[in-house]
Length: 128
Image (cartoon, rainbow, N blue to C red; front, side, top):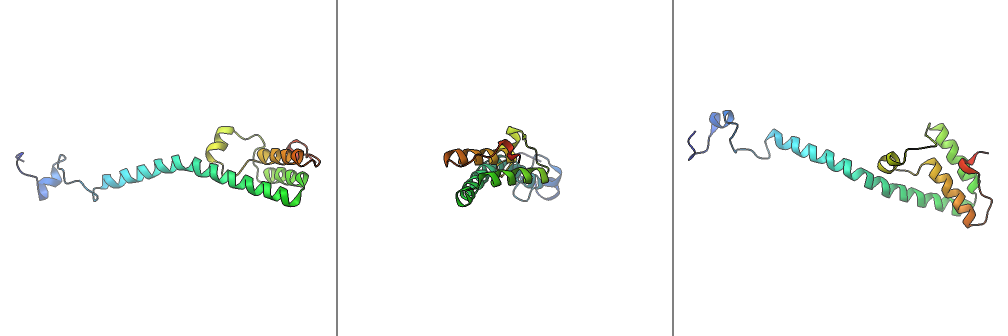
């Protein structure tokens, strides 16, 4: 087609350089979906960080209410074993994809809480 006029109808469908691209162009949907996928991958670790902090506060509250870090730590170990969770989690994987503190982190928190509150400290990984 001449440079002075825009292709129309069948000409536009056959012309890959046609500028009749817009929101209805299937490539626009593919681009939007790709951007959503990338944004989700970038956003998830941030959401998980916030979730882990909220869960850690809930754990601290449970310790404040029960004042029983040994039972708390034993329960965390049992949950890890029953859920087939590793007791030696990968740090990077945990930081990126875990939305709860790991069993070992929760057990360490119970031990710290016990030291701070001068109550008997549970053993590492809460082995009874």
